[in-house]
Length: 127
Image 1 (cartoon, rainbow, N blue to C red):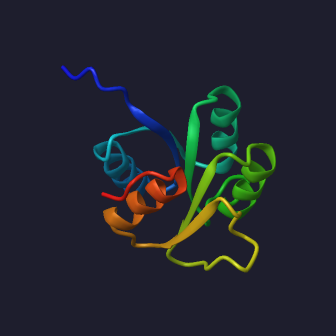
Image 2 (tube, helix red, strand yellow):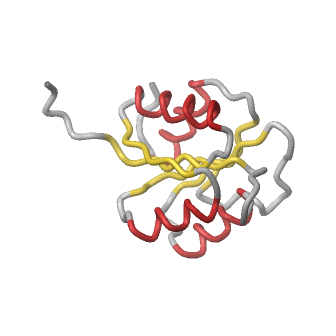
């Protein structure tokens, strides 16, 4: 059993179960703690009760409530210290949609792209 502390916490917001599971697995395998939400409304509830989340990875196109762009703007207004990674295979964000502490990754993304973006936002060494 390892005595190592878990890495920073990443919240994955994705309505597609398979994509969410893959992202959570990649992030966990890289040494980060993870939380999951199936939509923007659930993500806001998690962020309201858990103060340790450092990065949010969100899909743009999500049913039920706010989309990933609106979620990113809400998070940036409320907690600008949280890094945001916006993903999509359909929609490309417009100028200004990605907060200054954010990145856009086109789906399908690789593990290197996702973990690299997380590390960059946390100012951690790459790989």
